[in-house]
Length: 118
Image (cartoon, rainbow, N blue to C red; front, side):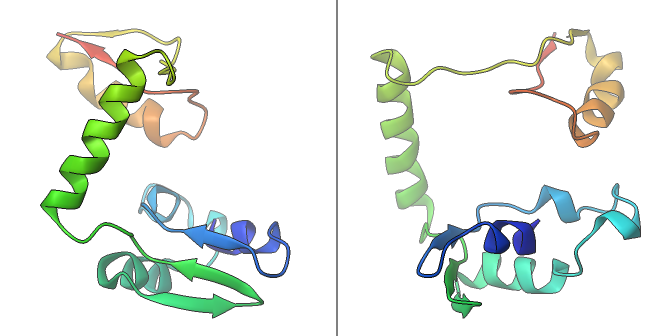
């Protein structure tokens, strides 16, 4: 996925890594792009590299204070109507449906957040 993002940027573009679910073990080896080590290392060290003329930066938050500030901005935007949340159409109810919900989330077919109603 990282290589795909880089390939679709023009020279001088920027990519910020905020997660790497496409590299989780649920994907067949043929679906991975071989960048797992690079992505996880950059994510957790907040490292910045230039790859093929594109600036790639690991997670940009520094700690819990930055996460709290970001959360507050998102909540404010949501409450003011500037931000809408998409929820996947498939419904999951009860704790027993969590394994199915996780499987659905990892399928790559979801649109929006996967929600389990408890």
